[in-house]
Image 1 (cartoon, rainbow, N blue to C red):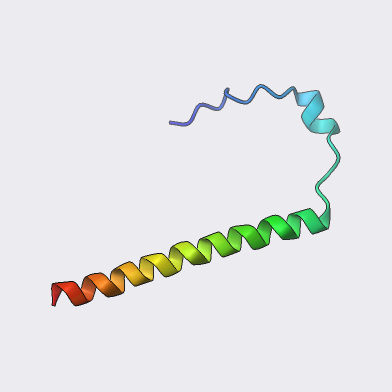
Image 2: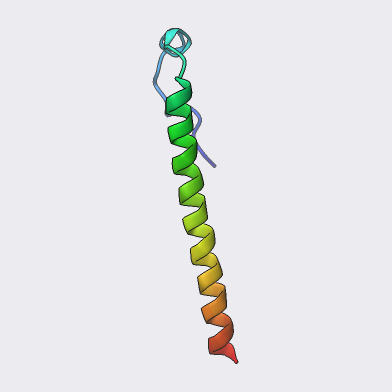
Length: 55
């Protein structure tokens, strides 16, 4: 199980931090989507190559 107490940031620091800009959010989302697509493609390639080896 994950330890939820490992983050030592103070609540005040978290609550007073400026919000993320729309541009930064879009950049992070594009990066996450690209990583997820790479993983999905790798899984599909692995499945495809595995099915040929078994035949």
